[in-house]
Length: 193
Image 1 (spheres, rainbow, N blue to C red):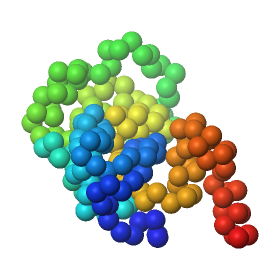
Image 2 (cartoon, helix red, strand yellow):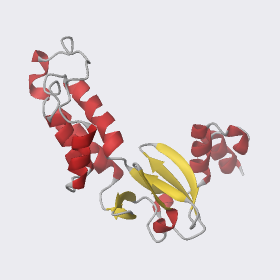
Image 3 (spheres, one colour):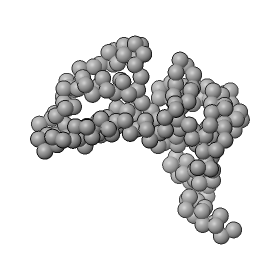
């Protein structure tokens, strides 16, 4: 939990983890942070605690009081609620012809204009899918996870520790910046020093 302590300051580097994808960002007036499809000034992160989950509201970045696990766990609960009649359902009769979803982009934009956000939009999309109820619980969970990634991004602020930096550079394919040092090798070096 040491990586979660403290608050973001202006001019400081922070790791922005969006649905598991990590990116290094300097918090200043010139840089921008992506929260879903919103591109917001990174200076709005100043004063937010490390480990916080952030969302975009009215063109600004604000803290979501829930934990990252809580946000992503909501969709797993929806899919597991339908597991009782699992043996009756199968995906063999489902075809992706593009006609199963009753909501189009225009209708989803209207829902957003009405003030619906993330979870509510995903719930509406699932309810307006002609094939959602007939899918297996695994397929429902996969479908909800895919839609959640698009409409409910989990953006978390992480303090840049040496281990986190190794993971960021390894994930982005920039291993030359850390001389191809993995997080476990770094831990061994620190333990032996």
